[in-house]
Length: 197
Image 1 (tube, rainbow, N blue to C red):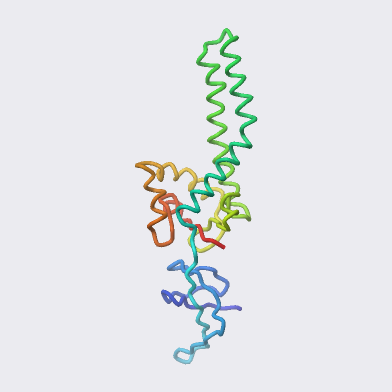
Image 2: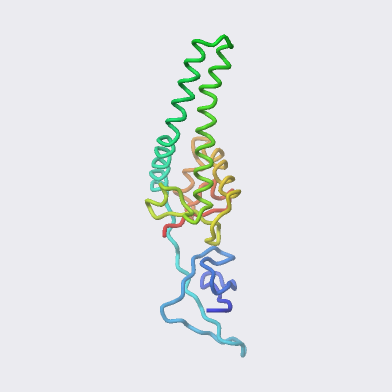
């Protein structure tokens, strides 16, 4: 279908192929029986029914995050074991200061964990899957406010915005349970939603 339609929730004009309203973000779907309205001699315009989408709530997202955390640890465990072991052995046998060898072991393990979390989440959310494996299990995906796939840069911003969500007793994460579209602080900062398919 070509042309535009008007959101049933806020009345804003949108392209016919839009999944979400460009003004209010409401999910839109073609009504079972399209209704056409003629205004002032203009061509009939179809009215689309605004369907309230379901979003991933607090607890389902917590479980998805735990699954992702376990999967990442399984993947990076061999590397962290190697670097951690080399750091430990090196600190016992090396003539270099112990601090340097501890950095080689513990510091690289820390860097691998940070980089692994970031790259996993950013690549998965910006891919055609639009979700990490934990989110996919529960049928969730991460989109922008209009239902489109997010870029790697936006996924990166969302990932590091979680640091702010974690501050002050994780209030930024708890916000998911109380906001209308189940957005945490990191979602609001990055302009993302977590709808359920």
